[in-house]
Image (cartoon, rainbow, N blue to C red; front, side, top):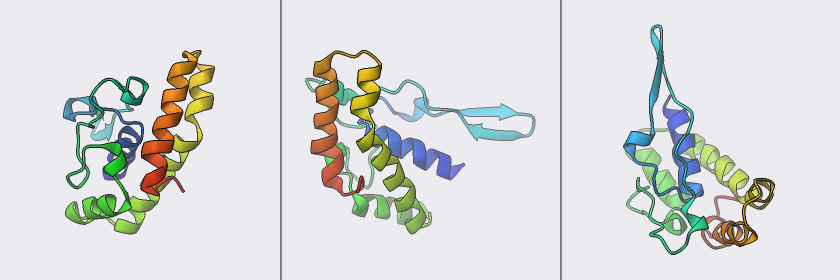
Length: 134
């Protein structure tokens, strides 16, 4: 379950979801097993740059998506006794997909062009410079 949480945290961080606080992560219980619920209440604030862009859960002290890089994720892994190489692989996978897909996905959702442009700018300015999307 910790890896499912890491993937969700990486996704929320990569899209700049400022509303991904502790109450937006849930467990589903079935019989004698618990599993992490699918993501919900995802708000990529990059679409509205006039609002505070800080994410709710910091990664190694960084709250701004552009400050969250491989070094901070590696520190997060060590702090939480997680395999550092695996964590970086998981995070890079998520960031790579977030970097590749927003313009097409948002355009397909019939969002206004200005929001598609903002999301693309967010990827160029915040995701790609971290080195995690390459």
